[in-house]
Image 1 (cartoon, rainbow, N blue to C red):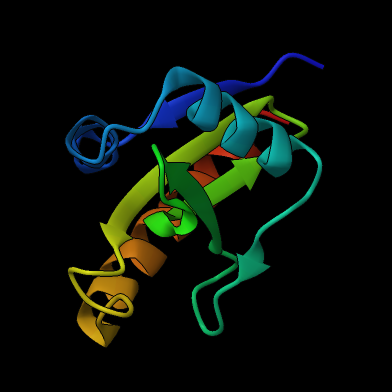
Image 2 (image 1 turned 180 degrees about the vertical axis):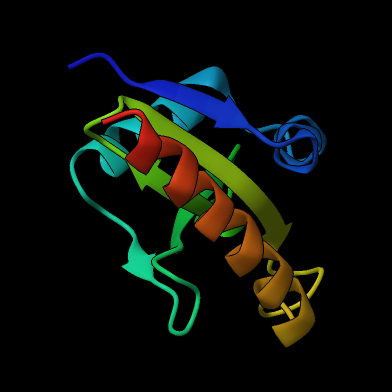
Length: 112
């Protein structure tokens, strides 16, 4: 099934700033389609995956939070950060993203 990836502006900016190649982005997309990514606790099912940066691999790249809707053929890349920015997302950020995820869930449930 074809999948459409919808990138948040912040994620797009991180990809540009960290010099993440198109190939590395495609690799992350492939991994998402294969079911990779760990569910972040208490976030209504938001998952986290790493995307490698040029010459630094995944550990030196960005962490991306995403909401995946394989039956609808959509994946929303909601937020991202680099490890050198900080280790993880704040509780406040996760709460906001959780609200967004629940809204997306409703949209995709209605389309069934």
